Length: 202
Image (cartoon, rainbow, N blue to C red):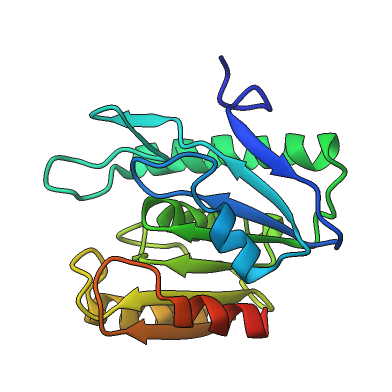
């Protein structure tokens, strides 16, 4: 099975508006995991949810990480390249408006969405990143003018330290993105309040 086309396991639900939410799940989940989140964000959008094709101890992920939990950036690049090809195929197959594709992801999926928007900015109008951190040690300067990005993290999330999140937000802003940094007092989880806040301004 190729990872680069629509033979990749995925879910698509046609909506009533031009927007498509690209849903990218966290470690150990699959293409069905974020449907509730999607409906909370935008009940009228179409939903496109691909499965992460890297397996870690039998758990689905989008890219590999090392035993110390640092990211394999070569694996990120491969995952993002395959995801971009999948998205291009889906745009044609499902007749999606390519100017209205917004990514929403949690944890590993959110990190993948962040990597996608800095590597292929023309594919996304923005992203809601829940429980997410900077995917690369160094990000080449990219024009993200007009992109709308929400970084929604818990202050006690060991995967996304506050200082690192603050620096990442400032870097994204320096690329021209409109960034909202949402914080809750918990850990590595999605806050209902954050979901509501993003939905209200999406």
